[in-house]
Length: 416
Image 1 (cartoon, one colour):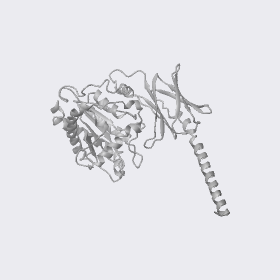
Image 2 (cartoon, rainbow, N blue to C red):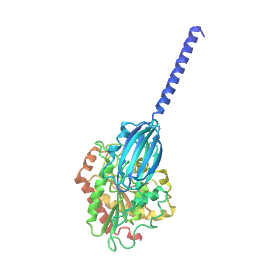
Image 3 (cartoon, rainbow, N blue to C red):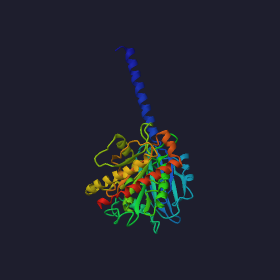
């Protein structure tokens, strides 16, 4: 090699080394800057959730103080920014648990949050890895230390507590529906399940319509109609903008001894041209179509998006329920067919038969359960319709007509 070439080669090598060194320094510098990029507060009568979202995982310590009741959270390795300062303005007057959140730079490396409380709470804190649109999350769930009582008692809080301990089966009846013929000896018990909620918005349309809002409006309309029926009783898995894990939704239906379970959705598909109403039942053997498979996957991701602590995953699926579930699936298909035929009168059908896939929310072993895709929120025309009170009311009336027809034709009594 000539001297000139040798010097050129050496210079390139040094430039390369310098560039690599600069790159590594800038990477280290960037990695050190943990930032909170969003804060959200979700109040509900069941529990209030506070979420801090950050570009990197947050390290924290927490302790409680009394007189007045407070929870103090020290988040390490971050600086106070405008996003964090904005948390105070997110606390609403009607929040049952939070009075206010104060925040400050405790020392050069720690931000301190002080959650001032309206009542004594049991906090459940955990972190979540990035999923869907979310980065890293630190979640603070505030549960009341005393559950509700009286006529308006909702078992949801107790079920959530059992779920968080990994013991959801503890207080559930062996078989959910009650004795006697529904609608004759006793009222038919209908559990409505508006999909998504809280941290989990569900699908979002082109014009920013959120699935969680639309399906709650439809479920409330349907609940009002059912309450007018002399031989029916109705419950809802949620009646607020709150996140409820999938298994807790199923558990609530079993706890209330429901005769039917109706999950209400308005989903998105990869193609905006996809349109039409659909009805789904559970399959234990794989999906009956690619659409059903895709929708089941997106629905079953709800727990990860909404955010559950790992302790809530310790829940056994009992194989002894399989035989019972086969009979339940047959009833679900009959029920689904009645609802689908009525939906077809108010909106084109995506498919004119009940589709099946492994939807986690349809897994009550002894309650006929269907998932109604009212329309595709990803389709611009259907998104527009879903926003109208007229179409929402039509959907509610169609589902009620399907419920009535199912019971008029004998319902699930043939196997009981």
